[in-house]
Amino acid sequence: MRDRKSWNVPASTFAKNTFNPIRNIIENMQIVPHPDKPMIALSIGDPTVFGNLKPAPEIVEAVVEATRRGSCNGYVSSTGTEAARAAVAKYCSVEDKLELQAKDVVLCSGCSCALDMCITALCSPGQNLLVPRPGFPIYTTLAVGLGVQTKDYNLLPERSWEIDLEMLEASIDDQTAAIVVNNPSNPCGSVYTKEHLIAILEVAARNKVPIIADEIYDHFVFEGQEYHPIASLTEEVPVLSCGGLTKRFLVPGWRMGWITICDRGNVLDQEVRNGLQSLSQRIIGSNTLVQGALPTILANTPQSFFTDTLAQIQANAELSYSILREVPGLNPIMPQGAMYMMVGVDMTMFPGLKNDLELVERLISEESVFCLPGKCFDCPNYMRIVLTVPEPQLREACKRIITFCSRHHASAHVNGLAHANGHVNGCEAESLKNVEKAMVVEVKSGSE
Ligand SMILES: *Cc1c(COP(=O)(O)O)cnc(C)c1O
Image (cartoon, rainbow, N blue to C red; front, side, top):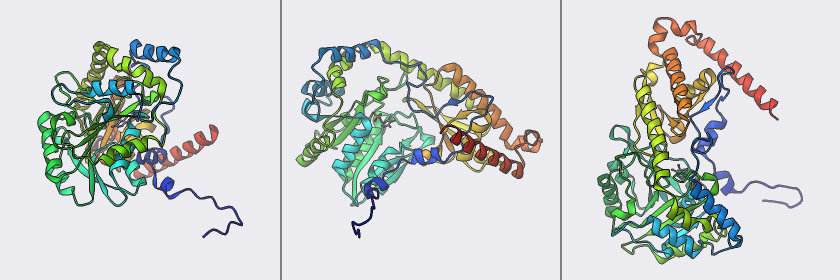
């Protein structure tokens, strides 16, 4: 109860219920790099930060041209211009399998906004949404704010991160509003075969659950792999597919994403389409300059740009896989696409370290290499590395990871090596931690 005589301005329940688990973990981490070693961040899922991967000139030119044209400065329909939506419909259609039209496309402010709209359009408070583990934490961030519960289904590392289909099916109940399928995957870098996608669709069809497909890494697959949009493999299951320019075109800051409504069985209530349209009015549509450039970008970006980008990432994947695979206690899982690799850590081999979180913290303080702990993806005993780093830096990072692992490995403790380095004794470890804490405080107050 408020008396209106004194100020009382709390945050809303929605704001308080909205949080990003990665941010929470990172902000509470001891992130003070070793003073003598330049930091190598294998943690940032933004391909533009290192300067080695740039959008093709055709992509940049298209926006320059749209800016000069002068006709892309105003408001347009909140779902996007007809021309831009038609271009996305064409780009996402699959010959003979999936025919999309402009009316099936909603443009959004990045793929996260697309996911937000799909989850909001399909899930009511009290219902649940099935999400992958390990998975991108934004699904939970978006759902929990809405009062929608997420239920994890496991991905199986020994099967190249395919979905545990039995667990998926067992997780479906009366309140399940949708299944999120992320392919290719962040953080796993897995790319599903047609057969596996069909098996997922069979679970959805048997239980009459729609799919929200996070396909932001569409076509982002290594040589010899094939990408299939999940909607192209079903005539029955309704799929809201979320995509965008962000990753494949290397322009995350342009905030151009989209939803394609794929409903060949015509089972979605008309209210879902209306709902997406209404939700798009909350932000009055996406950036019109990029919309103006979209038809040109999607039609004219040369294939060689995609091939070159992927060749670099694949080479990095092979390099880091071949190195880390030889490190006792580490078990990298070779990706088939996207821009990440998960590395299993056998914590029993590192008796001085409590868990994956402490391992990545110590990797920062001792070697200035920053990997994301599996904890960020609800997947303990793993760490995620990004593969968009320039090759020399990746090589150096791997070298430091080797040094770190041999220093902390159980066998090093036995022969006294770790002790010589001052890392075996619990007291010493504790005092080192205190020094780090003091340094964090120093750095923080120093930068303000
Ligand atoms: C990067 C990413 C997104 C978000 O993309 P934006 O277009 O920047 O909003 C969504 N899903 C996954 C799996 C991602 O890795």
